[in-house]
Image (cartoon, rainbow, N blue to C red; front, side):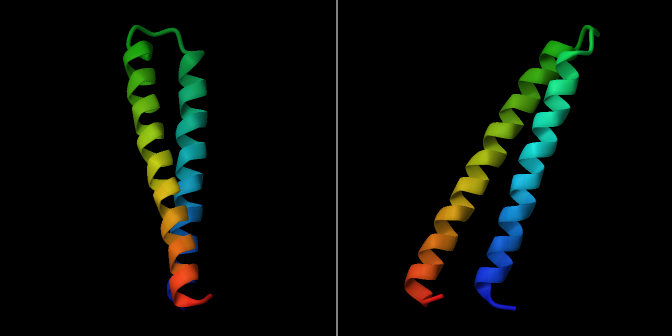
Length: 70
């Protein structure tokens, strides 16, 4: 296993996490309980942080490919 394979695996995990958080957030929108708004806000923040991590992984993968020659 090389570095590119490991980083790509982490990227897939990060993208899956973003999708899961997004789906949970959408389902939460349709719930009518009193804590739904607070939960939606927390899920939105978590999704943004996770997307930022995925973007950073993309940048790291591109830099690794450029400098390590994959």
